[in-house]
Image 1 (cartoon, rainbow, N blue to C red):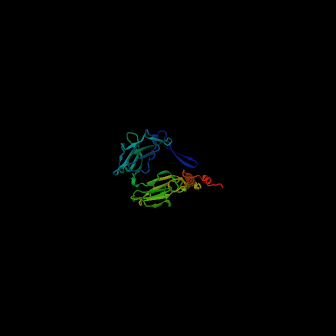
Image 2: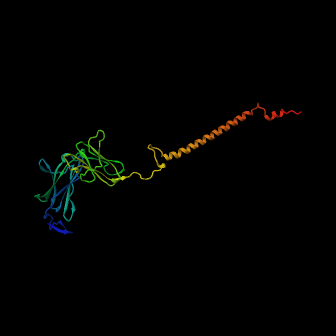
Image 3: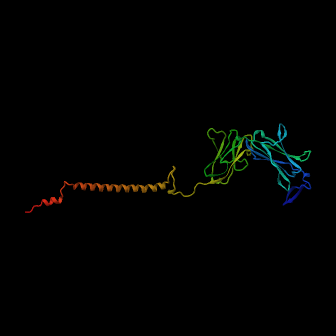
Length: 311
């Protein structure tokens, strides 16, 4: 049975199974998919949830559409079922999951989750369905960077498609609202598809951009997407630059450091040159003086002495 309560002016409906859960009506199951955008060669988990479920009286059964009819999903090396999982005790909300690995296009189709009475008759109580679409890797957009990222102010973000049949669209919400600051640029050489790019600004700090892959026929851009962000922006340096910290465009020492080394070096070379020239001059002068006083030369004082006559 169900009971309606009023909390803060709102009606709240509770499932209560009294006295026996098996006598209660099971709610229509809902089927969800994770990931929402399964891709070829990837994995997907389909989860079926139903309230008023009693694992002792009910059971989950999975079917899939095939040639305009439904066939049972049989577990194998690619398909497996999880045990029944209690989500909410109050409403007897249970779930079961079907996991498919190594997806192929042949796995696409409508999947039916059926709640069956666990008795000899196997009475079907209710069912819910979900459609599985397996996407080609070429249909997905490409984000650069992909996911959360730390980037410098002025770096380039890219949202692109791989094939020409799809167009990239960028929004900062999950809704298809285009951002005018993303500019269309030619793809790289030999690449197909299209791309949008944006230069990072400080105002983009904390923002997440959604990159969608759209077609002219499909306006539901959110079906195929990837994320850039949330972004952490490293701004340009704001410290005042002094000559001692100015660097040349080429790898090497700072201009100020080079100047501080060059000037003393020039002075030192000049001083050494002067000293060497002085010592060479002194040595040359000393050599000339010694040659004037050789063994064949007379002492000037002797000449003067012998030339004096007394009258």
